[in-house]
Image (cartoon, rainbow, N blue to C red; front, side, top):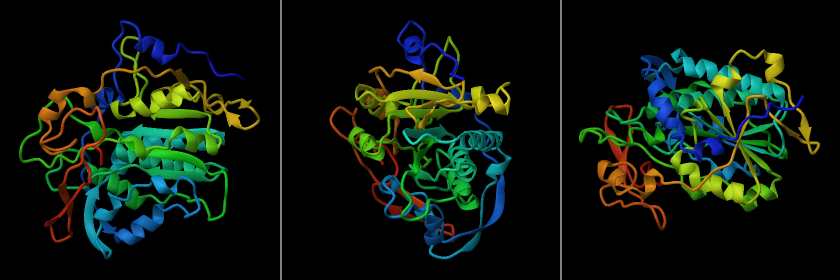
Length: 353
């Protein structure tokens, strides 16, 4: 059974219809940050070991350990948000099981751009349901803080309570799945309060594989997972920090597609959702709800001087300017120690990461 043919999202985005990035829809639908739960917080070394890919895994070099590094040197009792109470986390787990059970194509790069904890839950579920080994790559590049602008502790909670199935050393052909946090570009149209720690950040060109790397490993398509694909009147585009990578992928002949949890977990039965055909002998065409997307060059946050004027600590700091030639770095407050104090850490989080 071939996937249902759907009007490419880019055709909608290129018309008079106002397309918007996933974060615009995400903040309308976002649930409140859940209350805390008592946990035995692992040491940073133990946390990293849970998610660390083998050294010979070709996707291991893209992992960012910033958030897990905020844990202490020893395991201690502590509190983190109870992310299992979030409906989006439950839906992400269900969707991840469907995707993993259907089988992952050897020629596909997955980018999962959900609320951080939900992205972690999605990837964890895929890793356990899939027959093929799955390389989960963390892109989370900020620190938790006592008065944080975005809830980094939510994502950290998922990382320390879930245990993915990690590929074994020496295994080839692992399927790459990059986990993103939809909070990272939060509140871009407003000016945060001065007393908040601005722990927003964006992905830059080195955070995702380049075209040559994808070609080297046989990747021919990219599937971008969001909570929803929007509607005909307000379709979803890629997030602003992904516009340039997506353009490069498309220009190199890679197919870019989108998959929304709303479509995947709608009225279709599990049997219908798991239907796929094999393309070229190796590549499943996932689910009837996958939609082809042709990215277009468009104005983004990073070309707007007003965006940087509103940002006090995140996205490049007080001297940041619109990005035309490269990435700007800055220092942000570090993670909370278990005694309740903070330590500084340079060039973590913020625009460019």
